[in-house]
Image 1 (cartoon, each protein chain N blue to C red):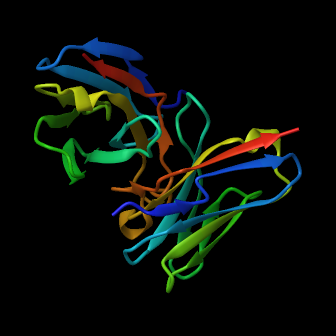
Image 2 (tube, rainbow over the protein chains, first blue to last red):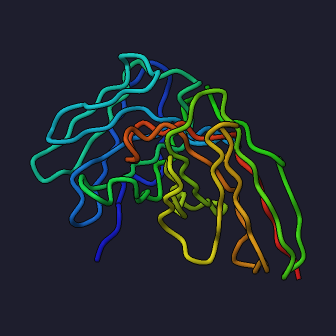
Length: 114
Length: 112
């Protein structure tokens, strides 16, 4: 049973560029959340997708956008990259229902903005 | 507001016990605990719900004081595999994993 997968593993971009990160949820999961984790910090919630719609959003600017596809996979897009966007981006999946409290994280995408 | 965890770091010998605390300035309805090993993704340990219900790990215990808006994670007879950074997460609408706010983290190192 495949867990949460993310691609790419590492990415280097220049300020002002745009980036797209991808996530495939754990089998049987229909909800995807994205987090940003700066070095030495806890993950910060960006947004959550369910039924192809953004359901919850954290305190992130509109430069951060996302999408969920019918197969439940998801993309995170960041426009006009800033140096401060350098971080580990984590995708987490969960399922609606009685186990909605348990989410599984992917290995993350390490984004470096130069 | 981000929950505050204490201590920031702790070093234990294998077999010793540890307590990690998580305090919030907001009313808590649930507290989620995760462990993240270096270079790896966070792993869900347990959730504590308002009213005393606890779900998750059967070898790690925790408490949830709703009035004090605090939770504590108890690691007894620690093993080398317990090493990592522990995060508490609060928010979690209706006990779900939605929109969690993670704490400042506690680095735990277990040595021989």
